[in-house]
Amino acid sequence: MASQPKTPVPLLRLLLLLSGTTGMLDAASILCLGKVFTANMTGNVVFLAFAVAGAPGFSPLPFIVALAAFMIGAAVAGRIWRTRGSHVLRDWLLVAAGIETVLLLLASLAATGFDVARGEPLWKLVTILALVSAAMGFRNAVVRQLKVPDLTTTVLTLTITGIASDSRFAAGDAPNLPVRLGAVASIFAGALVGALLVLHAGLTATLALTGGLVLLGTLIFARHPLMADLER
Image (cartoon, rainbow, N blue to C red):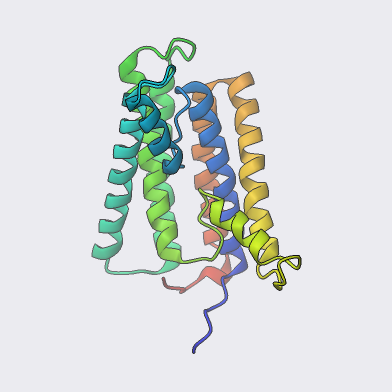
């Protein structure tokens, strides 16, 4: 069996950075948009079930919007992937970062004048959720095509499972441990930074800074010589 090609270090670093931005965005959405996830759709499905059951504090609309927008973003990314003539990794990453950044900056603009405490006006809440969730759906579809083990940039369940089930204690050899730990640490750090930004700078600034970080990080790492001419 042919061994899987080694993932370039710049790509690993970029995916860790993007994992951090996931934490930032989920911090923004949970703290400001009604306890809804924009990257973790498992949580939204569960919360939607709570809302349908009539549990206090849960309304179906935000979770439906997030799920629908996430799927639209993923579908658009899948279509672009299948219809593009070139699958050069560098080009694909730059296109993806550009689209994601535009969506996040539009969400930042929509957040101007949004009353976080009251969740009003409703159209702004729906617009922000839709834009950020679409960006995360697009991101997930892009990263899925990269097929980098343990670095989905948005969820950690399988990564944490792998840390434990492949550990020395479990009679394993702890493969890919630095990357797995890095993914957990990145999302934790991103959520911490995102929470601090939301609390001290507000939702608008948090979304804008996250979008800028996505674009700047991709420009830096995608332009690395090791990324030249690679395809996915």
